[in-house]
Image 1: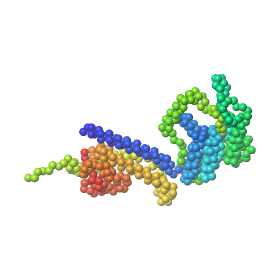
Image 2: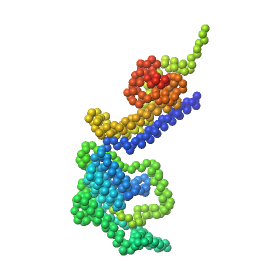
Image 3: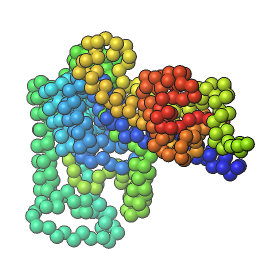
Image 4: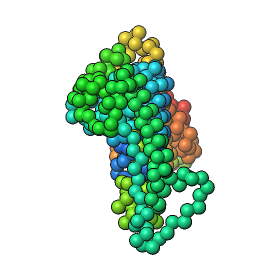
Length: 310
Length: 165
């Protein structure tokens, strides 16, 4: 009898727990579809370095933002008829040229259909400013870092280091400039010219884009496109941004542009679940085992290959 | 003299349960306990959705109800309500089938039995199907007040009854 009673209690508790898990599981599967009912403004954060793909560098944070992801978010927000405006919350030092251009193009396409408000927080420099410049309006704090209209292709070069350790680099390549920018040999003046030419072209393109997007005279943009950063207050005077303002200002201006009374956000943020965090930690742990912790720590923030960044 | 037929254990249980005036009240209290359980295990996970749905005041105006935005939000409301109802029925049906008792019934010492053979899952499912909708449940309970054995309509239909343990 006692056993029967115990069994009954365990069955009751078991079924309650089972239904509880089932409810959370089903509610979780509904979240993407139904949690944003009534949303009228898309909120898309652009935080960290702009890259083509997401990186797993920081297990408990996000060190970079992928253009694939942001472009997808912008396109979703543009297609959604309930969304009347898009807010881009930018806190990024820039990133790779192609990724920045992809994002800027997506913003331009969205701007043709609904207002896009770029809100620069701490930093919206270089490639991130390129993205912001494509928006309908740019709002920043007077202390925000903007501008930095320039291009870099700097990289680490190990030729002397390798020589000291008796390591030689066997060059096997067809084409004079095929290995221009290799970190294992010194850059000769001709190869430098080739790389610099590419950098200059990207710089010209960057200037054109900013001038067109911001409706500024090209000469004026050329003057300030020396890679220098500008604080929000300076950027306002130069015409690089439209308004100095905080969150409330951004919300008010969004209401005006979208012609809506209240804002309900549809937030486009990549969620980091426990499993993805654990997966990142595991991936990184095996990565460091492979390449050696020394290299992983020392050169983490430097690039050892030639790559254009804006 | 004709031999006296001994009552079976089940018949005795039924007899005792019908004579107990407090059985109905125990059923009400058991239902309230089960409803609290349902609120925490089934409704709470769906709270974020219910909060994001249009408020009742938004839907009070006839014109608002038929605006495209509000209509679009009614579809998920339907799916969520259906899911909650289904999980709610499962709570009663599974527990009554497996143990004859839900948490509330266990605490109030009452249980569900079949009037015929052993209790089947479909009997349990059928007797609880009115819990899919509040109006249906009220009608079901109304029937119980006017029925001599204090049975809900679906209990009659499913040939089940609630007795004291």
